Length: 387
Image: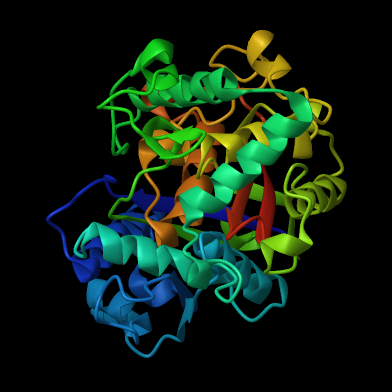
């Protein structure tokens, strides 16, 4: 049974005064309004929230009910899968619709990250690694992805400038995204230069190679195909796949991102299309090296030659396949639980032609690739315009 996205809500991402609860309430109300439905029409809801110490509430599923009394007595489930938490919530709701257990589903992703100190943020995020081999040995996620970058550079040559080009592209894209945490075009030279303003975080990754710690939330309404035909708008989920890999980084060849590669191939097969049929991609650029590796894992370029899609202009606005027209995690920000939901919302906006200044011309198919941990939990979705 097909399912469609029929409405959404999205907060600004950044260092926000809003509480975790108020972010949930804000986007839930916006999504219900956008879909033109009452809270009572919702059959079930899912909340994507990583937490792990960011906020005191560890039992938070019913905070969704704070948005509208009509949600009282609805089943709500909290979902967590590291940085892919938002997509995990989307997929759980899709499973319920496809199984016939729900006709209309609400998905909310939210995170309040900036209320804790920087060192605590680093510790919380590191707990999504294989702790005994990684976090307990002092490795942070910048350190883990720096090791991946060093391995890639050793295998294929120094690509520090390539990473800077990715950062500059995504920051330039983020300027036009009203939801983005950082709306500033930093330029290639700034991103490519180690400086007091752009220090090395973990060599070879500079500050501009790392995604932002952000607060934010996003929500969407899903409906089965029959119900979606009665709604104001609908974006079809044409194909999707989830693939999990081993948790220890030591068991991966991280220069080829096999988990995302497999999830992507399965999603394309389910959608009966190829990557070249797509109009845009929203991918998980938690670090610029991740976006470079995803160019190769998603079939845009052969292994070791991801830089070529920057050389050709393919992944830029106006290119054949723009990647992260939203600015990606790099500029938009990365509130963990909200990220995957946000990626699906922004792809749906593109397909409905309502993405404003970041709108891609006449899109028909969009791809989303959201990954949790070091390419451990991998979610791929192909979305299709229905009008």
